Image (cartoon, rainbow, N blue to C red; front, side):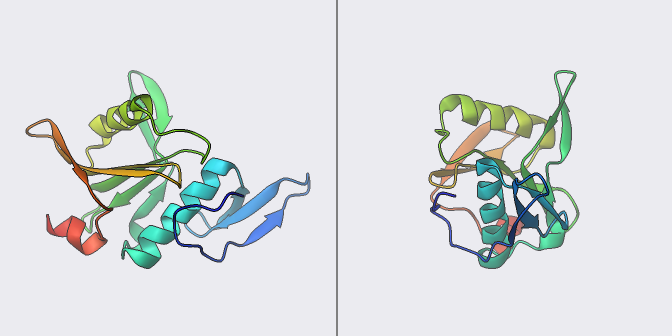
Length: 153
């Protein structure tokens, strides 16, 4: 897998009976297929938990949501201590450019979820915004807020 612009972590890798690469997902407590997008997702989970203080118990992977009568899934959602959405994360494979269309997709998902922070990453490039639903505006942040900072706002 490609080296990402996120701190490395000790990934527990194995292979399935059909020779597919697998990675241990500590949140789902099982091995999952190691796709390029999953590689990014696992790095983000470890970064949020180990470097920014997000409690693992408040991180939710591939949570379902309904949008325009269709069932969709968010890549990663961090919740606040009350169980409310805090940070919505959209992960893409390292080879996928973070374009306006990708940002629009994440924004549309967040209209349903209502997280005050939105992060889009392909592991190499990261964009984070603070979202104000009252004024319908976004403020781009220089960095991803630590958990303590995010819940204090």
